[in-house]
Image (cartoon, rainbow, N blue to C red; front, side):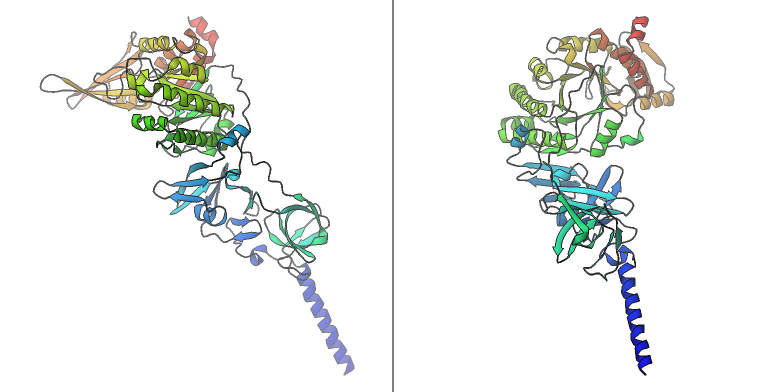
Length: 564
């Protein structure tokens, strides 16, 4: 009987030991023990908590998109959205982030209002948080192998640590809690609360659990840094002619990574910013991936800001000191967030009475941007007698304030012109440059070249009067028109362009064509007048060979000398 009892006791001890040994050493699947971890999905960990997300984050090339609901509930309450405009609004009363200099930081001491485009995906709104980490006071890391996205708040009291001896990560405090993961000597970990002899930690995979405190060496508090978004740009030592193209973007930016690098192009200007209220609210359509892709291709990014071409709004803005300051504060903040290289100012249709006010605003804006060492340029029309379209520019003063003046030497015959004609005949362009050079130094003047042309529709009424309407066409569309109507094309020496015309439904159509030959002719004026370069309106309207022509004309001076 005693032997039986002894046998039973030994069996219990062995069984218990085996079970406890299995519990101590057996490695189990973390997805079975970490609450809210789901296989095949991106698991979100904020500090030491796993977040149960209704909508999954989206990881794209150079982008991390978080659902708005996740940001609102777990990162900041100071964010709101407009579903109608797919836009997020962030009002920051006391910024914790810093700009490039103390002087700029002081500009934001009373706060700043920012807005960002959202993406609507399957009825949910997502914000790309790359570039916004310091704005949102977070740091982000994605572990692709484990499919875990970790988000840390910059001002938390967590510490860095390191494993000093091989051990195990366990889901609960206790020697006999199951093994979640193996931890090796030297592994870096993030430390949270100490509970007796156990310490709550997060490893580099994003797993959260417990380790014996004696297995850990505390290294330091996690440094939050100075929260400076960007650093002052290096001076741009550009020894080449500027070859800039405007990229007309209504809202969402194209994917530059899918495009071939354009040889000779060195600056791209996306139309991202617009002042839309007298209080200085700036609509922001910037895209951090676009900037990164542009930089990867060797382009500088000079983002454009306009006034909506609204003279009444502009007048009210220029009279509103708080509005002007608010607009400038937003622009310098966006320039810092998106790592811009420059700002291109496109203010058009301004009352002549606001001439001096506009100049003063440009001076203030340029002064702030120069704190970041950004390149500042402004667009002007060809000098003419029009008060609201030309004379409101104080060209001489502006030429002293900014780095470059873009003279829009196109729209000789504008969209609503009562008469058909060329968008930019060669003599008209030359005269426009010569007039502009009376006010602007040649080394600061960038000449505008159109990639578009206009198709003019002429209709004769019963009285013999000709009614004219027009539409802007790309170079490729013009080629298709010529092919469709089998129209004759001739070269006009006095205009410096090819010309064609055709008839349809009793109406006459006329086109003074912009193509590689006319662009080449205009680009040669850069050397004739020793200008800073060219500004091309707009990307997507050109034929492919125009880039080769521009590259040869702007940078192959030996060829030009031989041809001349």
